[in-house]
Amino acid sequence: MTHTYLLELASLMAIFAFAIVSPGADLAMVMRQSLMNGRRAAIVTSFGVGTSLMFHVTYTILGLGLIISQSITLFNIVKWCGVAYLLYIGIKALRAGKTDMTVGDASAAGSVKRQSLLKAFGLGFAANALNPKAVFFFLSIFSTVVGAHTPIPVKFGYGLVMASCLILWFVGVSLFMTTPKMRTAFSRASQWIDRTSGLVFIALGLKLATEKAA
Image (cartoon, rainbow, N blue to C red):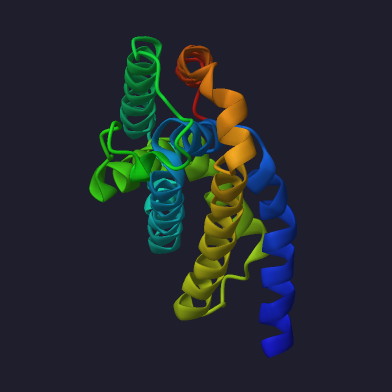
């Protein structure tokens, strides 16, 4: 039986590995946090993204994902909340001014206002939670890869492994993007980074607006 569970986990991770590294709102958010608010904020945002993954896993296991996937109304509520959020942070990024990043980590700079841990966590959580595509992703892989008779605690264990890998990936991105050389290289272009990331978020929001329930 243990062998079966390990095989299921390996199959899940083989599929999930592609989802982790694919560009999307999560990656854009963590990269922007790294460059604009420093390592501390980016790492906390990474934990927000990982925690949100467990949110998706939980409602999928409990069967709510199936209800959402079959309800146009619920799907559209989630979708338009996600669209509004992405457009909001995109417009906010476009309106941001130049940020001094030459001091290393922004969290250590007296001239830069430190972003609260709660806000950094919330940005990561919301970026992932308000993505209706996650509903179908986890519903599809859990229904096709995980057996119907797999115990619920084991399924939650799968989710914890996936969330941990997601957090580690984004923490790695955070560490890389906040090295002194990277921060120095991006310091002079901080305003353009904000504008570019803003356009990315807006584009993701517009793309999400065209998504339809399967």
